[in-house]
Image (cartoon, rainbow, N blue to C red; front, side):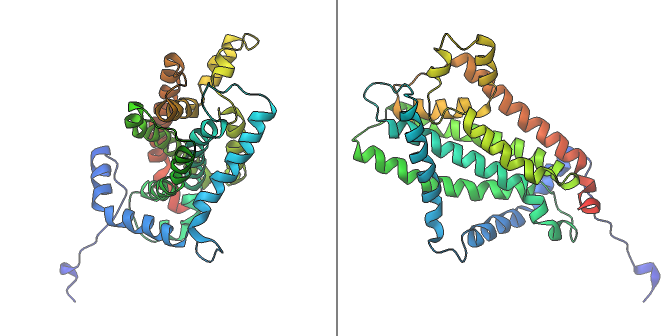
Length: 282
């Protein structure tokens, strides 16, 4: 074969942000494939299959109801405690699962990363979609509870997707940051479960944020530190949208929103900064 007719093709990661995001659209079919693959194998060879999407948040919900009752957490009048906990457990389960799955996604797909180039951010992004499907399935729990207790939500329910989106950007931002660190420092596979467990204790699941903000024994500086948790605004927002009679503290909400946005922006920045070395290190 004539050597002059041979062409060398080099596929390399894009440096420009505009080209990078356009490449994500180009590789959208890979994104769909990874999400669909994870959906198919998520509960493969399990005894109850997709029912795990309901059983996991349900068990967490029952435990949190007991803890809230044990410590006499305040419950708004005419609101069953289990509804208050359910409105917090579902977004927390989505966040914790999405964060954990995206944080470990690059290591789990290491073979794919070393074989072909594509925007690596597609891998953790596809795991978020799978967790979103799980959330939609588990939302049936809340619908059933509202039917049992004959609880009808108000107009605020229309704003629920906004707070779900906030949970999504918080989990994705934190997840891709830890995913990038996890490639170089495998210690983070052990740190992720600790972060999730710690977050469960400091998020208003078994209790209400009013227990924090209206408690004179808690210094104001600690209340602001508490509001730095991005899931505080998400859970308070879910309760406000679904139950209506719970308070939504605007200053704390704006602070928590700022933290979620910062997590997303810095997560993308750090991921893009280290992405070119993933195939060499992994």
